[in-house]
Image 1 (tube, helix red, strand yellow):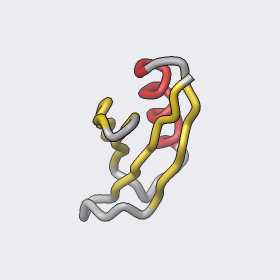
Image 2 (tube, one colour):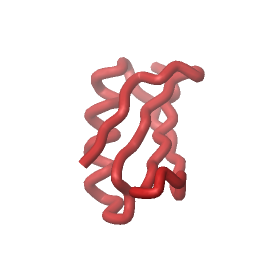
Image 3 (cartoon, rainbow, N blue to C red):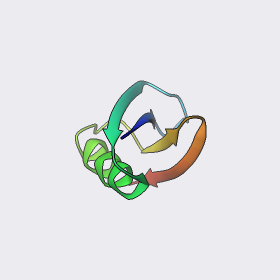
Image 4 (cartoon, one colour):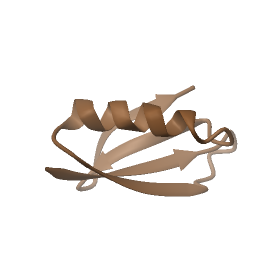
Length: 60
């Protein structure tokens, strides 16, 4: 399992929220990030990182 960081951002590219996810692989982490983003109406997107590596960026 890997620890992923979810860095949520708003329209002004501020980072109002940080969350962590323990997942098996990058695809699972990106799917979880999409699900989490749906719960945060004030956020425009989320960047997913694992050990400092940018896994992906999900936007609305």
